[in-house]
Length: 224
Ligand SMILES: N[C@@H](CCC(=O)N[C@@H](CS)C(=O)NCC(=O)O)C(=O)O
Image (tube, rainbow, N blue to C red; front, side, top):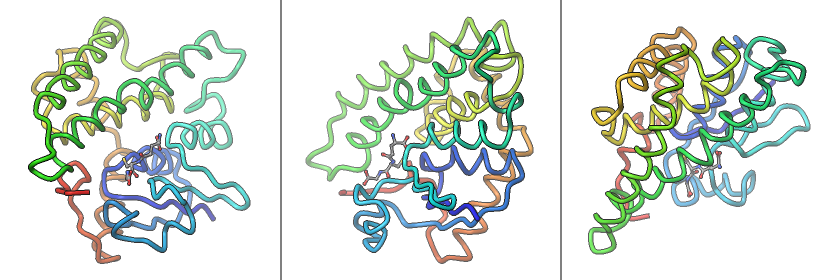
């Protein structure tokens, strides 16, 4: 049985969304944010205290994009995964990692310096600079998504889950109004998917059942 450690609408939403798209059985353990302060026994499973942590038998993983790749390759060859002999294999890997390494990274600085730090340590200029940086990185998607429905391979893949989560977080931060039309339309298409809706419902249900606040991580307030 797969076990996923998750905080509501944190990066662990990527593997949760994949699990729902794939219809796999899993156990979802929801933790308050940040686990390193609010759920310290979790540090025994992941010394960094970061989310996600994913267990599948002897396999243990803590990188959200890598878990998406693992699930797609193992459970959805040729569908949610793009295979090595497909023309878009390189584009697939690129977008899968772009979602985390290039898009989500500047968002973490916005969250930290606009919300998570104590009032005296907040840095509005840093938050605005990284907001602009994030939006300029999104601009590289605009011409692509004006031409095609999904990131690559002519179908929905794990790369869409990776990039889609970055758009979800941007929406939670309040940046959706600054999306360009093709990116906005793409984000609306992704939200309309049954798998996405089931993942939202699953995290809400599990949070309530496990007595954890059900608001998204982006609404958490520090200092931490
Ligand atoms: N590159 C990792 C980053 C994991 C990460 O930093 N997760 C955040 C949640 S979105 C976290 O756990 N932050 C809490 C902390 O740093 O204490 C991934 O994609 O999974």
